[in-house]
Length: 361
Ligand code: MRU
Picture: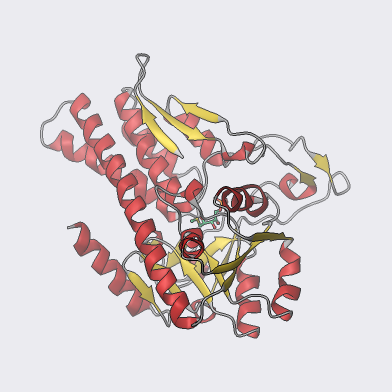
């Protein structure tokens, strides 16, 4: 969903513009870090794992084009605050650049080192995605023996957000490939409709049995006994196991608990932030009110007025947090590429992170 290219005019990062989906598949060519910062803010590229990958390539792009790497890294890491993967990816490429400089390499060689770090992260994410799918499916089979899973998901967690098949979506896709997915329930995900525009698009492309619902229809779906498990991704997981994910995730966790349905979070270890102690310490991005007071499909605008169709009186104030935080006691399991932690404890999470660190060397 994103690739590095080196035409004669200089290196570029090419992204599939997610704001145009599902109507059009349009690519966006970023020639420098500011263009990528804008693409991140406008959600042309979005979703935690791919933000990390994009951030790393953004640093490599700045280095390759001779811009100030630290300035670019700071702008990229600050483009969106909640998904920790963004700053992790930026740091990986920036550290690789500085390590090369410290070894006495020239700026050109250091840029190559930054690009190698971005490519490595991209590969690692694809591998992590495959392993999360395996662990997630094994957990589903354990929790729900007999198969025929009916899975509810929120926001978008598929190939659009990953070097591989994604996070939560990758588990549902693995179940589908093994003939064990009865239905994927897709929350539309107001206000920016990542579920309707992106997850439904990915489910349709993969031939999955899926049904779209408005976010507020989820309660009646649970009440009707139609949900076997909830699978979502994460933007940041605090050290205590609190999970920041797309706004609307927390109400699903409450519903799942009430209806005795497993609530499973699937995310790579890079999403776990041991430096953030608890849920209250997670910075939740607040987005412009016009995303709520106007219908913006298909293209999400980021600056100025929305330019969409008004659905509220002019001047209406809107509450528009992009994410919410689910406390660990409502999460049945967190599945990573290193395995699952269930029940969710700080010790269990720290152990998985340690394992991932040792695997990377
Ligand atoms: O605002 P977005 O669209 O970037 O939010 C993305 C989400 O909340 C996803 O559910 C999360 O990043 C998990 S992606 C694998």
